[in-house]
Image 1: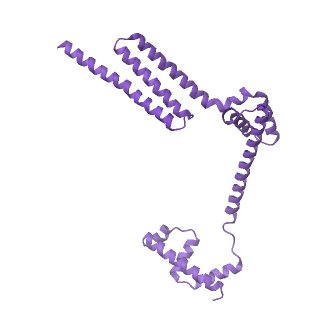
Image 2: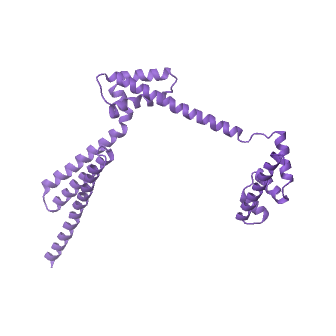
Length: 256
């Protein structure tokens, strides 16, 4: 009876460990498919592959530990730990690379670029950002040539132009928005006021009341509550009043 129970426990443990190995294996298989079918240079894709290998090695190490193969178990767990450290280091370097590679690779050009940017009126934060973008463009996206310093200068000049172009677009957009905010309700001329009064006098009393509330900034819900009607009815009355006002305005404007 005891031997049968031990066999059952051993069978269950082997099934569990086999699933621990099979799961990472399936994940690794699909990760390789992602690498083959998509952009193999994508960092997130390679992180997924490394995580799959780590899980596979760790699961296989646990499996070997269960079947009393201590040497293979330790080797697999060590490989999983090593790949975990390498992956973590790669993620850290990738996240901090744009901030620190500029001063580390081209300290002279970087300082020279910062001085030039500051003399052009760029703030310290923007100057550091533009100079770092230029260096990162060389390190990551740029094409090396025989004169890296010249290429750095060209990349820096392009980034400066892009920076000021963005600043100019933002400034013009802000100025335009400010102009619209200030002038979206221009005061009416005396002639316009007389024309509006003439239009209102020729409308029905309920239409006059609704248009007056609209001019005061009342919402359709507030008009409905004050009249004791539904919201849809208030919207319909407001629309009819506006249409009547528009027709009457055109008639008076044409001298009708």
